Structures are given as C-alpha cells and as structure tokens.
Length: 143
Image 1 (tube, one colour):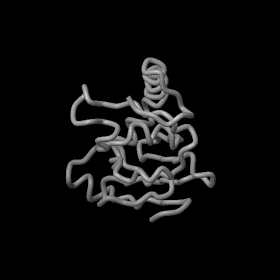
Image 2 (cartoon, helix red, strand yellow):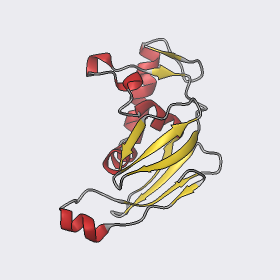
Image 3 (cartoon, helix red, strand yellow):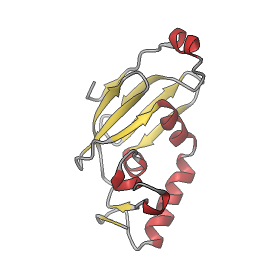
C-alpha cells in the first residue's frame, strides 16, 4: 500500500469481539509532498504527523531507541526527510519507509495516536535534545 494515499479498513466488529478498545484509524493519507502523514481515528482524533517527527521517534529502530533508555540516541539532519512508503503490518500497524532508507520503524495504531496526541511535547523534547547534544535539524549526526 505504498503511495500518496492509504485508506485503512475498519474492523470494528472484530476488534470489539477481541476486547480491543484503543483508537483505530479510519483513514491514513500521505500528503502529496510526502512530508505529512494525516491520520484520522474512530474516536474523532485527527493528526497531521510530520515525517521528521515520525522518523526521529521511530521504533523499534535500534538506531534511535537503542536497547535501553540509556542507549537512546538523538539523530539530527532529518528536517527534510520524506516518507516513501506506508505499508500495512498485519491489522495493527504500518511500517513507514523514509527517503534516508530507514524502513524498520513500525507504528502501531496506539503509537500513532500517542505521537499525535503528544506531538508538540515530543517535538520540543527532540529540539531540546538536539541543542543539548550540539546537533541540529539540518546536519546529519547522532549522539
């Protein structure tokens, strides 16, 4: 399901029967410039998630998250990153492919909702980490 537009099917009945109550996406759409992933959830929440934010919070990327909190890295130079692909992972997540060839980040529906809900705080934390580590959004680097 790569491309500019990905629409998610809604499996509400199956999820209710399984006891799943977390928000479920009803639409996922990649903007034409590939810099924003718009996600609409069945709880009414709607988020425009920047490719930069998604790339820097991507998990389970060992590059970004490390194998523990103390190993978590901050990566710079991602201001202009774009999303090349949006591929389903079962019926619970998507795998995003970025133009820097990072393709191991899996974003569950709950994680996408959490990123959207906390986007401002997460992005500010990212900016603070960049500054504290002498990195910036335009020059590649990790610490």
